[in-house]
Image (tube, rainbow, N blue to C red; front, side, top):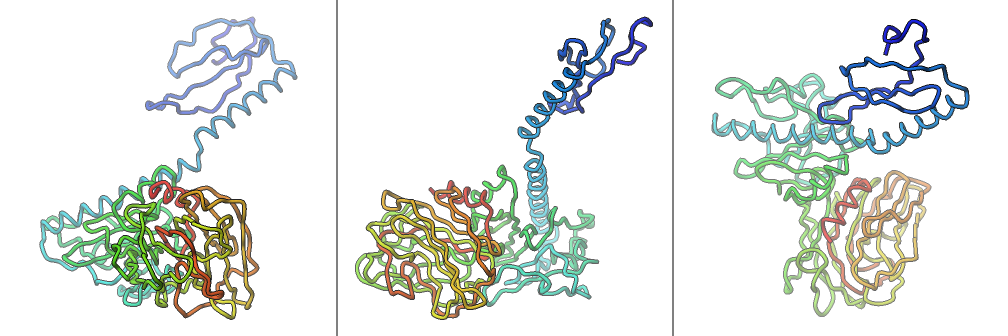
Amino acid sequence: MDSEYYSEKRIAYPKLLISAIFLNSEDIPLFFYVRMNKMLVFQKWILGKNRNHSCTNKGFTLIELMVVVAVLAVLVNAVILVINPGEIIKQGRDSARLSALTSLSGVINFMQADVGDFSMGEKNTVYVSLPDPAATSSAGTDCGSFQLPLLPADWKYHCATRMTHQNTDGTGWIPIDFSNFSSGSPLLKLPVDPLNDASSGNYYTYVFGQDRKWKFSSVMESGRYISQEATDNGLDPASYEFGSNVSIAPFSHGLVGRWDFDEGASSSVAVDRSGSENNGKWFGSGKHYASGETEGQAGLFNGIDDYIGVKSQTNLNISNDLTIEAWVYVSSTQAVFSVVDRFGEGYSGYRFGCSNNALGFGYGDSKGRYEEFIKGGFSFTDGWSHIAVTKRDREITFFVNGKFVYVGYGSDSKIAPFFDDMNIGRERSGNQWFSGKIDGVYIYNRALSPAEIKVNYDMSK
């Protein structure tokens, strides 16, 4: 709408232009022009449209200009709220993660068909896409520069160097020489996570298991893709697992305990499905199993002498960030918080649970103090409830049925180490027992996001 489109006797009026917003699949930018003397948005112009027209305009008054600016501010804010740029960026990164892991698995499948037998790495090793700055040779390191989730005693991490971590010749973060393809490597370089950051947990892992099976894993960010973590048939509902055997090493992104109580009515062992071998032993009299909230059965606790003892393992000795989740059905009034208890005398370790109407979490900090957090106002005797706590540095957050209900802050972020057994259904220090049913107990040595907590609740109810 330049001045050449107007009569010489008329003044070419100014244009108020909203930046082009791509509103459809063809990405056609729409421009809005505001008529000055009547303050009407009078025409939608599509690029390339015939602009032959006439107009009679004089100018904006100050009040009209202020009104137009205010209206446009509202429109821009509405567009931002609808589009949610931050979520779109996260979706883009998640889409890249899915594409990368799918492509890598496809390449390995083709390579097995093309080459046959070739080295796929060492067993009991979690290969990580993070380059270790301390690595000085192609042999790599055990990722000691990063604070990664603790692994079972017979497992280790491996990181490549900054110079080689994207190499495709076996010296990269994936220990496979893709140049063995008959036509040469189909990969120019190995993909890494869009963030590739240890502190956020956003990095890729690769593990090699029995019968030449493998698995890749990643952590998603966006609400759109996080739900796929719980539906990929893997054992960790808070990480995306992809490969020829998604059951390998479910602990590669922080899951250190998973007790589903589906062993059978006569079993004396509560099996840990996280792969961390934190199996528990039943103590007490009477029946130990009943119908559960998640698939199958739940643990049944009589409130007198029933509990599960889990032998002390290094990966349960969590020192900072953690998540504990469980389904609970309290059968009577009780004042103890005894769902998960790894707390001992001298204020060390951690514990989490519920009474009939409150949630509680506590830990012994590195200065010998007991940090305790309690939130009441619930009813856990009316049916099944999903409860969760996350600890992220000093921040303690509670969730009930997937919804945020409380946040508090400790004085010290470090949890003092505790080296004795963990109990499920019993408060160790007071020798008190849970009365009711417990199902789907998960422990992570990282803090899950609220979106991950919500998905875990939605997918298990």
